[in-house]
Length: 436
Picture 1 (spheres, rainbow, N blue to C red):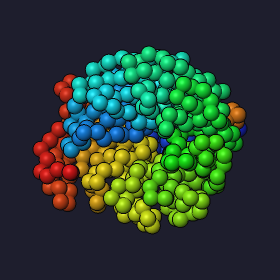
Picture 2: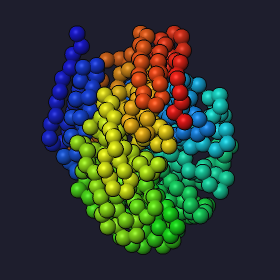
Picture 3: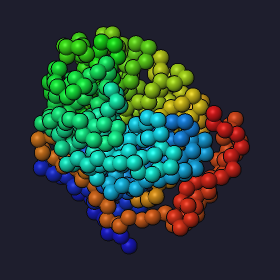
Picture 4: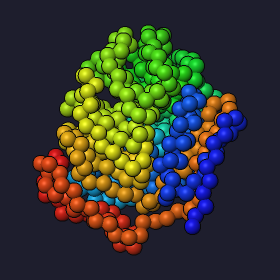
């Protein structure tokens, strides 16, 4: 029988240690509650397990995403069948998403490498190593690649993987840069938001009151970004001048989504907000039972978001009315990707889900190579408190065959068979009807 213990100390540190098979969800919730009560934005550390903290990306009928099992996956979006997997030496695309151009997919790993892989075959083209783990996405512009590292640098590479330049900040750069009109916009954990020219020269910087860890949104002459200081900022993209800010009741570790003069974003206070992009006035807000992560784009009048209450929510983008919700077995750490017919989202329960966008019914699910959830560590600013989740069991690979049959309205019946690792370790099956 496995040993487990639970400790939660308010003071210099808080440590939570549990057996993942019996207490995985409780462990996650305990760690997140400590972070929520602190009202500060944490520095997350994530270990090895099957959980999916990567944002999925759909391209040409193929779904790409990384997982904490050190692997990057390519699946058929229609059926969930695995096409290929690529193995690194650390959790992949943590809090970020892959970038594609032509037949190349770019993604980052906690092993400190940016990888360029053939999107059709999964074969490595090249890799570039930094001095610390990577939790950033890659921006592509001006025939170059831009990404941040926890070593405090923003890097610019050629598409062949050669270093062009790097820009040093005073904190880890997990914020995903945005390339817009020959400028690069990004935030750092040093509490500054930066605007650089295409050669890495600083144009301006704006000082927030806390860390900036997520991607900004740039449109026309404005840039929008959230901060751990509970504010969403709107700046003039040319000068960095503050135009307005919106304050919530919790840190805003969120990527804003802009659609038809409405700006959508989430806060650690458990709300998804919609405000006017012109002046920041609140239009509506939707509350879940726990922390919500960044929303998807608006597709078909819907906007979707994952929550640490284990649900994926679909809302009417104009009114915030709940259309449907889909429950997983653990917090939803992956920001959903929504198409006209399907919503794709990864969960901490080690599964990638495809959900009918119209009614919230399951189309298919795919389990990563490990069924043990990844451990997490949340270190709060100024070193005031540490919340750590440590698994007691070694890594376990999937062993037995599981068969799932799901009746889906308007889509017929899909039978998904899970094959053991000794065979092919992916979901296959005969499906009547297609999601697109």
